[in-house]
Length: 94
Image (cartoon, rainbow, N blue to C red; front, top):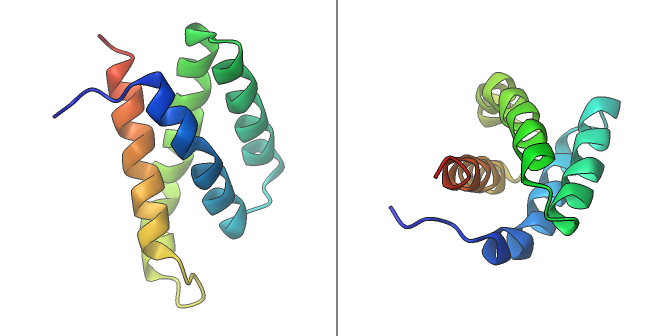
């Protein structure tokens, strides 16, 4: 698997955040996504990892509910967002 570059993640980030916000207005998630944008902009890898872990943990708990919810119209976008988050987080390990 190719390592996702920071620039590519920046391109995808707006779509990821928009997708999350179509599903939840959970104040924690709204805060996490705001701080993730800020950390990426500042190139703060330490903070980016912390926030990515929180967003990924949320998706770990919600992705099955999302996939089964008859009212969620963009299930494939959630799966794509989740996969991108996982891929970028993995890229920060190296």
